Length: 554
Image 1 (cartoon, helix red, strand yellow):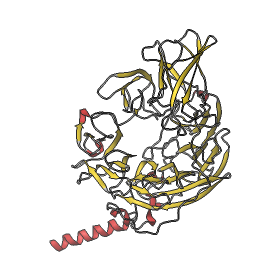
Image 2 (tube, one colour; image 1 turned 180 degrees about the vertical axis):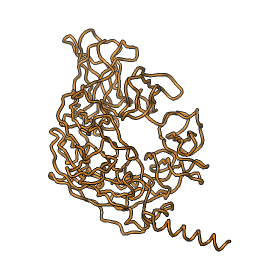
Image 3 (cartoon, one colour; image 1 turned 90 degrees about the horizontal axis):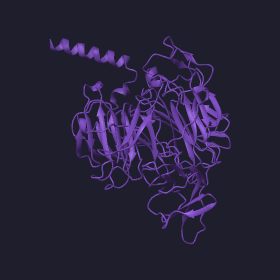
Image 4 (cartoon, one colour; image 1 turned 120 degrees about the vertical axis):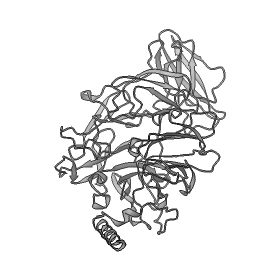
């Protein structure tokens, strides 16, 4: 009897091995904190000095909270000295007056509680001893008629699905790059048979339409097929659009899914939409797994040499991961390196997340790339891997101010008996810092944000979903202490700096999800403080992006 059982087990193991896509896939759950490989040379890009956005002061006006005054906010620029303060000026009816008795030092906002009737011009002037001040741009405000929002009309009445911000014309003001329509086809869903194609359109800050680029039927209308980023990649002071594109040789299977054909990384001129250059996207192959897993694509930007903004094009999350790094030099894309997880020793598989984050984690002035449960060094070698598998959410930040450097917060899809399904690791080394301390089941959402003034650092919160037969939610402090569970835990999404202090606020209402068919259907949202007052009401529509468009308040 025992011999018969043993024989059956041997046959089963042989069959499983024979039909496995890759035997290495069964062994990805191990820690790789000390990679064993030869490091690649350092990246040397074209930039002489670090490229940065050249934004203006961003002076903006909205009605004050009581509706009677004019609230002004503006940016503190990275070129401003630490002790820079500001005076606020107003011009109306042919008279100019300074509204501030003392320079504003600790904030970048001001309320004119006694605005004049009619139209008035406002501007701010930095105050710094020994330097000639440069006044901000002037803005015109008509008291009682200003609005707390800006709206632009999209061409052909399209509905936005994703938005990016960048300065396209070099005037120091953010412009809009919008992908339409709002529909989304996930790799695990049936293909779109309506004939809809994704389009990217560019608009200036005042709503002027510039161009529309049709991505065509070779790019399926889904977020995983159509990543794009916008930045000044060539250093000319104007942003370009980097986007995944496809050729006319695309192939669809019986389920109407694109399963073959040419794919590219294309860079478009921000003002015209004309293609500057294109290179091959990381190619499909069987090492990624099935079609669903092959069609996981991401993009990012990193200063790999500390000065040059480089484009990162990636394929894969659940099995193989491949990342290409490029610079745009003199109108041509030049490859800096390729990272292939199967070429590491040991191999790195199934560590990818649903996002890519970059930042300088080791203090050498060059950016590293957080792919999920693993981190790449600036030169395209593995810095570390936790071996914990695929995280649904990742965050790179200085979570705990009492620890040196940054940390990574991981919300992991695989079930973990060891308590590491919700955990924090050191960003430089990947070494464990703390974990939730008990078994977790498919942690599908999470967030870090400083919204509670009682505890130092950022609060960490996460939620399981029904895929693991649990819907528990967890709230933890920056050092891993439990602060709440289930009903005590806020929503993981849509946190913003809203009211001028350093604490974050969140949205409450009929819908609190990120865009792309989130189905709020015009119902209203409110912005609220954690266990506190309501700050803003009656925001309609879907939240597609949270960003500082016009100027910081602190």
